[in-house]
Length: 377
Ligand SMILES: [Zn+2]
Image 1 (cartoon, rainbow, N blue to C red):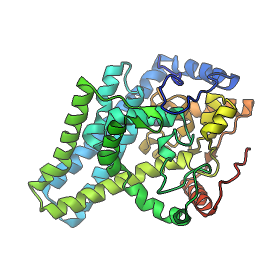
Image 2 (cartoon, rainbow, N blue to C red):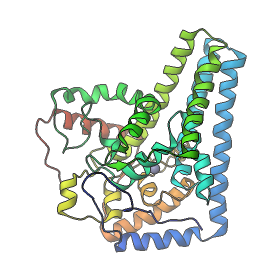
Image 3 (cartoon, protein in one colour):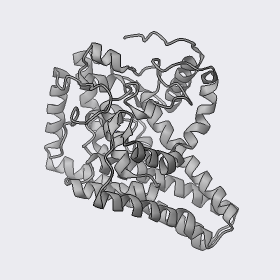
Image 4 (cartoon, rainbow, N blue to C red):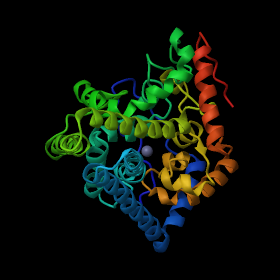
């Protein structure tokens, strides 16, 4: 049976040590039901088979698109279609393969999960080693906590939560945030990976220097990615075509990735907290996760397939080590128990509603010149 419990509170943080109550009836009852659901060998196997099938589809799209671009050397129309295929394949690997693997949900053993998680290095160009700290620790443990969750720390470029200091240029952040999102992945591939290792921290979480296999994985991964994405195309195209193609590919990948993550946490309906508030009142971790996170388009099966279940972000945060193919079923359990225990559970009905909420959130925080009063629901 898959590991369902989220391991929290065991990380080393460089700032004030923040801790949660790691229990409560809501998560105890939810976890029991989820474990019962996953106890069926057939259910468990079905979820894994769906996950592995998606991996084959993702790599097939990625490789076919790359071969078309590099070896077939098509005209503009087919070339753009192949580039779109390359973006689609990369996004699928990012959402449906490396994300599950780096959470430990893809296989049963840590070694194989890390090996599969290396697809982040090889196919997406960013370090899976740094990602496991940035995403699994900083973001998943301290969701929407100012200074601790690196995903919502974009100062001085943008103000994503009320406790961050206002600046005059944030008035336009709801407009310029989109080009900012489109360079996010290129930042991970270059500066952010290096900065994390030089500073030895992401948010307030400690990053140890990678050793042996981790270091080899990082260096070989970077070389492999640069090899297929930049060096190989240079043998067949002029440098400026490769530059334009690479920038277009990375920007599109980045925009889809950033938007997906932001719609789940950076919206009006999500709760935000500062370290001071956390210290003043200790929170129940599971309740904190549900109330800082939002699901969107839960009934859209195609979107759920493409996004690797990240539209079921609440379920992902509660059960990150369960393959994402189980989230729709787990959502029924979580929703029912949230209603029973009075935990605020939000699911946006459509992508449009979620996007509008994100836009309003950014515009409101950008306009207000003083820290906003948080409305506690
Ligand atoms: Zn995650």
